[in-house]
Image 1 (tube, rainbow, N blue to C red):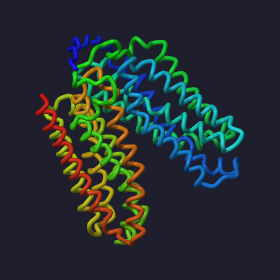
Image 2 (tube, rainbow, N blue to C red):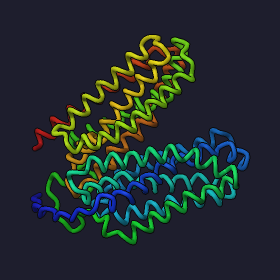
Image 3 (cartoon, rainbow, N blue to C red):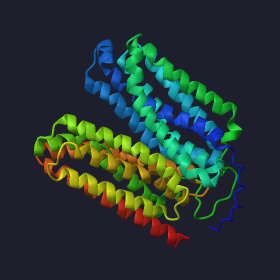
Length: 406
């Protein structure tokens, strides 16, 4: 079958940095905020619906499951019809789903509502990265990626504090309506100003063998490698925060207060590294070098500081530096994924590779928990360190396949 070469995409004009980035970052803030709305309210919801914590945990699992499995498919819609309407629609669906949660008369209603909320949440990565890549000046893309990532981190941090504060003054289900209003207003703004967030589309265009109209483009070696990279990234993220404290307590008697301080320092260092990493990504000629260097430093610091007992003051310091080194790699990682995609395939590719993190997040807790149950806590730190090495190997694979394709 002979395919007709598609005409080159017409570049869309870039707009002011804040004009595009601010609404998109607020949308990303909403995405992360909604992911953490319910867990702080679980004690109140448990009493309200007379259910177990396991049943409440199922709501979160459904949310992430539908979100992760839908991203690549949503990416097809983004590439075909543009990101603006899809992003606004996702915000409306997320807001409507949680408004439904606030009004749900029984627990059974929450199950389909969380599935719909997961579908609404699935749109952010394919939409946001397509918009930023198309509408922000190329010399500022790295900084845009870093600020976008910080907005998501802020959503994670703000959700528990905000929901607990609101629930102290009003019923928990009424408290949910505050973030619902923010998401709905953000979606309305993006819909009204949709021309500011337009992206290249493939609708009506013939395709070449390398530009499948569907999901075939995801079968490229570099795309699969990027997916694996994101999946591996869940291991140090979840392993360090959720399982390493228990491992250190069992091995060396390290107080949980010390490991909590270390994890806090890691998160703070990661935020600073992410911010500076955007500036670095806009200037680096080889983003893979930035990632490799950052991951080597982060992995070495985590392993050395957990392989033996060390003074209490040193553990937060080591973790803070490791977080900074790892945070530096975030924008460079996104720049590599951006380079893999064409303007008409960014939605699919960003959606697919980011779903790798969701898959990893589902598998990592099961694997590490099984290791702890077998009394093999000494393996946790080496496995985390090995995951950094595996991520480095995957980055190198992405780089070399991209060079060979070029």
